[in-house]
Structures are given as C-alpha cells and as structure tokens.
Amino acid sequence: MNGLDGKRVVVCAGAGGVGKTTIAAAVALGLAARGARVAVVTIDPAKRLANALGLRALENDPERVDAERLAGHGIEIAGELWAMTLDPKRTFDELIARLAPDERSRDDVLGNRIYEQLSGAVAGSQEYTAMAKLYELHRDGGFDVIVLDTPPSRNALDFLDAPDRLTGFLEGKALRAFLAPTGLAAKLVGRGTSVVLAALKRVTGVELLEDLSTFFGSLAGLLAGFRERAEGVKALLADPSTTFLIVASPEQEPVQEAIFFAEQLRVAGLPFGGLIVNRAHAPVRGEVPGGLPDDLVLRVRRAAAELDALADRDAAAIQYLSTELVIDDAVVVPHLPDDVHDVDGLVAIQRHLFRSD
Image (cartoon, rainbow, N blue to C red; front, side, top):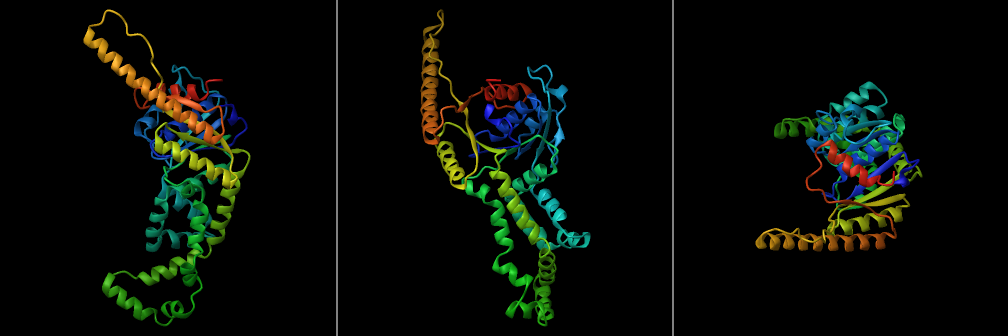
C-alpha cells in the first residue's frame, strides 16, 4: 500500500460486518512496522483483538502496544503502535470541557440533566464523536499517522456530514428561541416561569424548565467552538495528507455500499486512497489426492467445486468494483479459516495489505 506514503490521516470506511476494525488495526500495524508513530482509533473492537495486542481493554485514550508482544510473529516494529477504542459519551464530555470558556460553564453543562439526555443521544451518534476524537488527536500532533476505523453506517453521509449536522442542530430555531427568547418563550422563562415550574414539579418531580434555561444559557458560550470544530474537521478530511480507504467484502450489499461511498467522496471532493476487498475466497482447482475412499473423494470434489464457485463469484465482484471505482489495483485479502483474534492473524492480514513492502 504505497499510496499511504506521506499520509497523516487514514480513514477506513465501508459497510458494517466487512472487518473494518481488523483492517484498520492491520494498516496501523504495517505503518508502525515502517517506522511511523501510529495511533489506531477503533470502533467496538472484539475483546480478543485487544488481548492480541497485549492490552487488557482498549480505552478512550491511546495506549502503546508493547513491541515485545509482537516479537516472534514475523514482524518487527520500527516505529510505535498505539491503540484505543472510542467511548462516545466520554469523548463528548471531553469536548464540552475543552470548549467551555471557564470551569463554571463547564460544570454547569456537564452537571445539567438536560445535557445528560442530549449528550447520550449525540454520543450515540458515533459518527460525530469519531470525528471529534480524530480532530483532537491530529491537532495535538503526537502521532505521525492516525488510522480511524469508522462506525458502520448504511449511509456514507452520516459520517461525512456529522459535524455539520450537529452544528445545525445546536443552531436551530428551537434552540435559538431559548438562547435569545422572545414572545411565548420569553414569557415562559420570564414572569411565567414560577407557574410553569410549579406545574411541572407536581407532574414530573423535576425542575425541567430551570434545567433548560441553565443548559441553553451555558450552551451559548460553546457554539462558536462547535462551529470551529466543524470547519476544522472538514478541512482535515479534505487535506491532501488525509486519505480514505474503502473496505468491502465480495457480497452484494457491501459492494453496492462501497460504490455509493466512493461516489460520495467524489462529490465531496475528498481523497480516495484505495479499495480493500476483505474475505475473498481463493479457488482450489486441484486434483484430489489418490488413495482416498470413493465416498470421501466425492465429498472432497463437491466441497472443492463449492469453493471454486465462491471464488468465481468473488472474483467477479472484485472486477465489478474495480470497474465502477475506475481502479486496477484493489488490495485483496483472502478469507481466513478463523476470525482474527491473535497476533498471527493480524500479521497475516498486514502481509496481504503491504505485500509489496
């Protein structure tokens, strides 16, 4: 994967269930082997993958992988490999803390019950928090390369438009009415507040409107920071030092989503760096060894024919993808017997990705 030379951000994108997390980890491993200081940001990795890297659990901040953990597995790490998994709620809380103008404003927001509900909903949108963590790590400048494993999504725009969608929500008419109330809103937060609060207290037992007023008042000081982040993320994604790797598998749905995502990248003017087709079947097309019982020969031949049919299907899918994306150098990772759950499996994937190194 020579197309990664000089890149500082590598975004692995594609449908769910195609092995993006494993591919992202293997890309980071290969770049670290080349001598780079690399951080891989994973989304919901299997616990076995963390264990394979010698980490009890991946946390919300990068943790260095001990190079000794990889020794004896056919790969030498000339640089550094760091890994983390995204904690959406914690990432959003940290963003609020960074953007708050002072400690009081920070505490007013983080301790507010309205924020607890809103942040849970926003943090549930992993697209935005993945972008926020990417921006933070890049701005801090502690790594040569950041490899981002994106959340699974049926719509590429959910990921690419996440910063604008959140900013648009925070600047929407409903919220502006509370930030600068007029008319009915002014009456509610003005002289009519005590009456409404008394009614709400009787029904709900919480001081809802007071929470709303405090939250939206504190939020006003953060909007400029959200706008700046959104612009910063968009600039980073479009920067020549960023590249998008589309990860697919040969099945119909991932193939179509890969084509759709590539088109969205083209329309948005974002850099497409290559196609990785994971879990492709290889043909067997060999003679059955002699000396086997007839019934076993039949079963072996039947199994081989099925594998060859799968391999032909996968080859056609890869050719179709390559034609649609106008490329002739798709990276193909074969279907492995087991899920990648140890260092050897990760190294095997890395070798296919960086086979020309």
